[in-house]
Length: 205
Image (cartoon, rainbow, N blue to C red; front, side, top):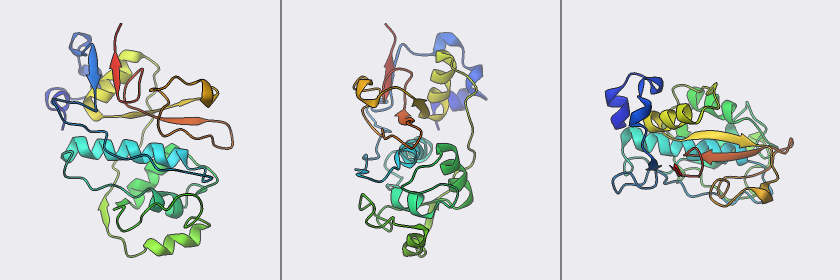
């Protein structure tokens, strides 16, 4: 639980004056809450799922402790989510809905092998049928705002948010789009966005 969550009922209750000029989830009083390594997606169009899983990993670490949460399985999310299309693309929001309905499993039980090696079809989900659920999503939602302060307050209280961009991925500046980026069939690029300006932090200038 964050300090802001203990103090305020909801993000919009945080006074503008309490939003820090600098904030970095990689270093919150010496602790990093950005712990999930980024998977090599190869020719598997799973950027939507990789971004969501990075967000979930960080939010669980914030809630329960950075050293308490095992690495979540991306393979399980991609192969078993009947709401999305596996390596053929999908929705970040539906990844969240799946986590509410089915939950997360440990990467050690359902390892990511990259490419389509173990993700050739929905039948591959049976590989993980005996993997125990270790956590479950509670609520998937959209931030109905583009206001920088509102997004910063959401991050302060609950952790990372996901953003999208339709820009050419090669033109995205290092940092903001440096991780979890992958085109889906519509050319959309998903970013594990943990700050308003960079992946992991923001600095007002």
